Image (cartoon, rainbow, N blue to C red; front, side, top):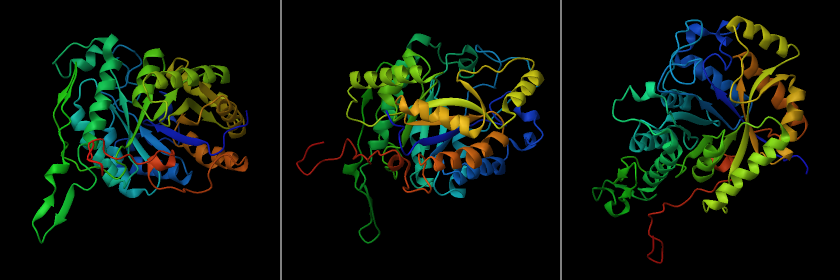
Length: 387
């Protein structure tokens, strides 16, 4: 199978980089991690590289070296700004790149997320997305004190959550706003709809308070690293981030997700499956990672595969995995700015030379970039009188 053309490429931004010791690099800007200018600079660099979108990490607790809750380490970055607010601040300072904040949905309400993402879509004029995340940590639940979390049901609850959000995005028809000062009519109340969602976890009446946004349905993404995650993502997302370690595993995971999408009745809908990699780029990339591991006191072994090597070697790997069925990749820079600029200034030109990556932005909205049409509101009355 020939490599896919028009490869999609995104970056995942998190602090000073994904390696826990990245903040100690000479070029890092640890004193600026909680400033707007820092994030604007990063996203503008990603936009210079013509990337599809950036994602912003978020959580309900501080970063930790433990999977079950906070640790006591003081030699790693702790603390984050709110991902949605970062995206809203960056939006007016960029023109083309998609902005995809993460949000932990386990202890938050879908009504709040729906209007926040729709508002971001307005602010960015159609470039908003969203990455729902789940959390089974007791330490996160303790911040809210409302309930115990059943880890076995996290993804089923998440699927209902996304469905509520999508319905709220549709609860205003596109032409619900009249804005006619002469007649004194601002909205057509008949074109605002109750969603009346009733499920195991949510009972939401609607409508939203935010009119239908430029994309109608902003892009939904999801990280899926196991079978439960694959089912959820196939049911709920437009773009799925996966973590294969070789081309054969990429082929298996891609097939599994598409089979789950068929079972969920989404066989006719476009679904993009991305590979997630942490990248350290350059001739001395392996040595640089080894030095960071030594500073941190442990080998860095995240949930995604780690690549160390040159931009040309990374291009070879990406195209090999694209031939296995992946439509794009989300790269996690090991350190910032080094690996972010290596992606935009070394990897992107290499992919362009191979004629598998764009030379300019050709579409405006994020949905258009992924070949997704702007859907009509599910509640809109058609010419035949049917919803």
